[in-house]
Length: 120
Image (cartoon, rainbow, N blue to C red):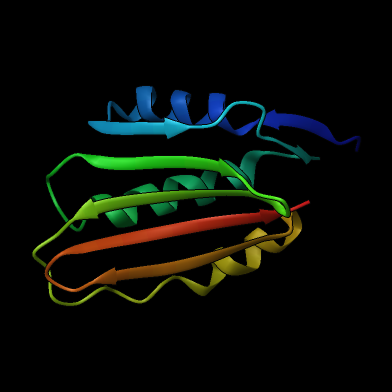
C-alpha cells in the first residue's frame, strides 16, 4: 500500500468537532505524517483524548507542534484526581508503525498530560 500524507492539524480539528469537545487548540500548520493506513493513528489519538477527558469535566488543551525531529501533540486537562490509571500497552505498540511514542505526565491533583510524538 502507498503512503499518503495525513495533515495532523486537520485531523485533530475533525476529531474535536466530531466528539464535540470543549477544547482550546494550539495547532501548528504543515504537520503532515506519511502513513499507509491512518485507522490505527485515529484510534490512538482518540484513546489519548478519552484518557485525558476522563480525568476532568473541564475544557481540554490540545496542541500540535513541529520539532526538528518530527511532530508532537499533547492533550492536557486540569484534574483533582490523585491517581492516574496505567496506560494500555497496546497503544505504545500501535504507535510503532508511525515511528511514534506515547508519554503520560502530570501532577496528581493538578493536571494530567498525554503526549504523542512522531519521528521523521
